[in-house]
Image 1 (spheres, rainbow, N blue to C red):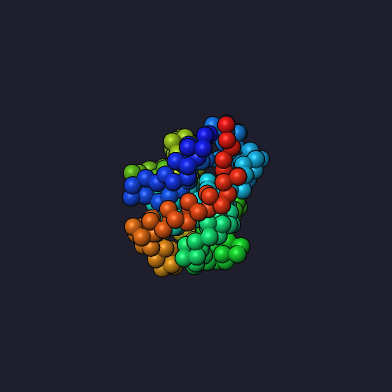
Image 2 (image 1 turned 90 degrees about the horizontal axis):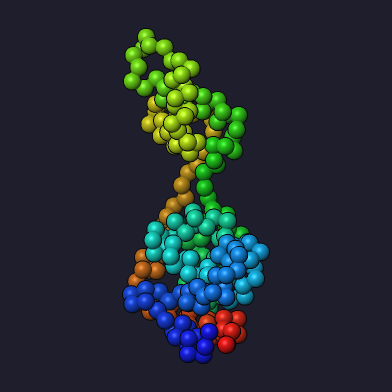
Length: 233
C-alpha cells in the first residue's frame, strides 16, 4: 500500500453509509492469512489490534444496518466482549454509552456479556429424545383417519424427509400451537428480554448525524493507529 492509497482508504466512506475503514482490512496482506476473519482463530490473532478492532466495527455496522442490534447479538453471541472493546477503542463516547445500554439489556452485563438465548432442545437430551419420538409419530399421523395405523414405514418416511433442525422447528411450533404438549424442555421457559434499549440504539444508529459522526471518530482512530494499519511499499 502506498501513502496515497492509505490516505484514500483512511478517508473513504460510502455516501449515506457509516465509515468502517474496511478498505484497510480487505487487502491481500490481511485476507491471505488463513482464518483472518474468524474471531478467536490463530490466524485472526496475527492481525494487529487496530485491524481486529476495525474488522469488528465493520461487522457491527453490517449486522445492525441489516437487522438491528438484536441481530448482531444473535449472530455474534460468542464475540460480544470483543464488540465492547472495539466500540470503546473508537473513542466515541455516545456510541459507547448507547451500545453498552443495549448490550446490558440483551446480554445481562456489558462488562461480561452473555447473550440471553433459549436453551437448545439438545441441552435436555433425554427429554428431547422422548419428545422427538412423539413428534415423529404426530407428523406421521397427519392426514390419517383415527382408525388407520401408524406403521414403521410411516415413521421412517418422516425421519427421511426432515433434517434435524426441521424436526426441532416442527416441535416448537406444535408445542406453541397446542398440538403437542411440552416434554419439559427448558427451551419453553425462555422469556425474551425487552428490546427498548436495542430499538433506541437502532433508531440513533440509523440517523444521518450518527453516520456523519462515524466519519470523524473512525478516521481519528485510523490516524491514531496508522502504524498498525499501514505497511508502506
